[in-house]
Image (cartoon, rainbow, N blue to C red; front, side, top):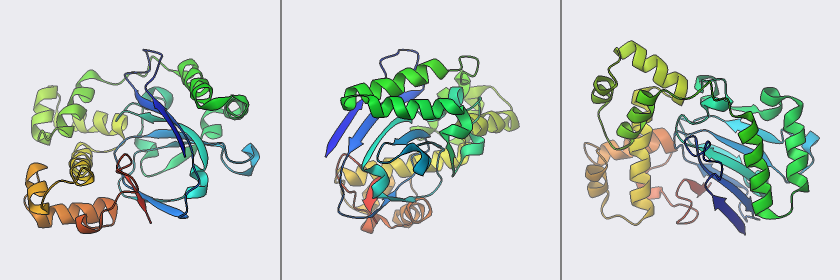
Length: 255
C-alpha cells in the first residue's frame, strides 16, 4: 500500500483544504463503510480510463455512513477540505452537495478531463498531488471566501459549544446564522454539532478509550444509550461493533 498525505503548499489554500492525499492499494474486501465527518472532498479515480466513469467527484458533506467499492480506491488522489472549506470551488455554497456528489466535469467542463490526463501523466505520488494542487490554486474563487463568524462557530461547535452560544457569539439573528451556516457548511448548525460530537467519540474509540459510559460522558452525551443512538444514526452501527480498518483511518470500516 502507498499512502502519501501532505498539507497545501500554496498558503492561500491552507484556510480551506486540510490536506491532499494519494493512495494506491489493493484491499482484500470489496466494500467499505465510511463514516461522516461533515466535510467535503475531491476524489479523482486514476484506476481506469477517464471516459469509463466519472474520473473526478466533488463529494459533499455526508450525514450518514456511505458504502463504497474498494475498487475505486485502488489508485486515487484527492483533496480533503476543512468543514465549509469547499465554498470557493462551489460558487460559495455547499448546501446542494449535502449527501451527494457532483462529477467534476459538470462543474469544470473540459478542464476536468484535462486535469485527469495531467494526473495520469504525473510521475509519482508527490507530483500527482502537486498537479491537483496547482489545478485548485488556479480555480480558487477569492470572491467566495467563507464568513469569518461562521468559521469561528464551526470551530466552537466542534469543541462542544452549544448551538445557542454559537449564535449569540456570531452577533447574528438566528435565522440569518442558520441560513449562512447551512450554505457554507452544507449542514445545519445542529446537524454539524451532532456529527462533530460523533466524530469526537469515534476518535476516542479508535484510540482505545475506556468503557463506553466514560466515552459518552467525555464526548458530551447524556449517557451510553445516547451515544449508541448517535452511532446508529450517523454510522449505521453501534459503538460496540465499531472497528476501524486501521488505527490511522478511524472513519473507514470493512463492510
